[in-house]
Image 1 (cartoon, rainbow, N blue to C red):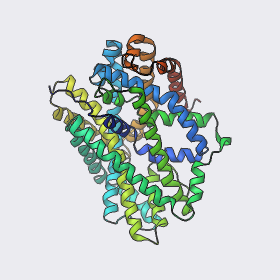
Image 2 (tube, helix red, strand yellow; image 1 turned 180 degrees about the horizontal axis):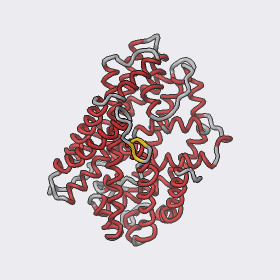
Image 3 (spheres, rainbow, N blue to C red; image 1 turned 90 degrees about the vertical axis):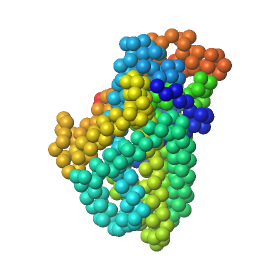
Image 4 (cartoon, helix red, strand yellow; image 1 turned 135 degrees about the vertical axis):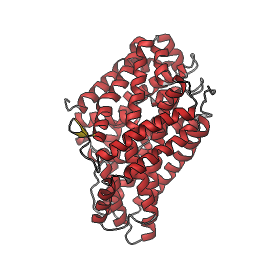
Length: 450
């Protein structure tokens, strides 16, 4: 067995772990929800949810991983006893399923980047719509792009923690941020962009309601990768003196900052051409290509550059997420089966590639591939988002709040009493009462009970 790696610096910890949180959801979900739910008022509610649920939940998974210094399944048994090992297994299974269907959308992003580079995304709105429909329904090409994205992820993860994950994070996250800032500047300088900025950032507290709070709570939960064992796995590579509270706060703020920047990229450009953005895949594969095409119609070269940068942004955002999801299973197979890391990575790559192919076919050429009336891809999304993720995070909070030694938790949270003793008591109250309640509310809202 190779010696276990650790992240080489505090910056590497923040960039790698924030990269796991920053994904396509920051671009296609958060801006839309902000615009529709009170603008800056929603952002304030979201920040409150991050501090109520997100940061305590992150710290809990950090403690499990750093204390055990091993893969997620074994880490939960080290922290809570053998009876809790299944929570780690649940996280590993959840992340594997998510990687399988997430790779399909990531593959679309990669294909769109190559199309943008070759200038094939320029045309009227009907052409953009037909381009996406033609590509996504093809029986072969989307599968190849999805598998190709998994292989790119495999290449990074197989290199290890320092030479693979850390090095990729130090490259991808700054590039992602730079590209996003360039796109924000270009969008905000368009004629009529002020209306989009006001729509996003002007607080409208009249729209704040129970549903807005629940939506913000769910966005905080999913955006920060709670329940996947990703945070637990990455924390197993933390050094013992890592300040967990500070790291969690920095990661949450960076993730939120990028999501807000995504809104400042989307809404000013949309308002400048009189288009109301929607959410989901149609936003990034149909609506935004049309918006950028119209907004920069008088400057074809600028439009070409914006299209390339935007699709590169999507690829980088997707890749930082897929790397973290791949690492969860790779670490498990590597340590539990006692096989070389490269072989362990191949095990997960093959499994996820097969799942990606079937998910791709289920929303394209072979829509008859269904479970319970849903395409395989939509079923995997529903299963993980509505059941597995909330279950994993809820059980983690129960284990940490009620079954783990209070002294052990205090020692880990405070780094043996050297930091944050006052905040420890707030954390304990949150993880025992607030976090389980918040996750229960998310679960009931997902099922349309609340």
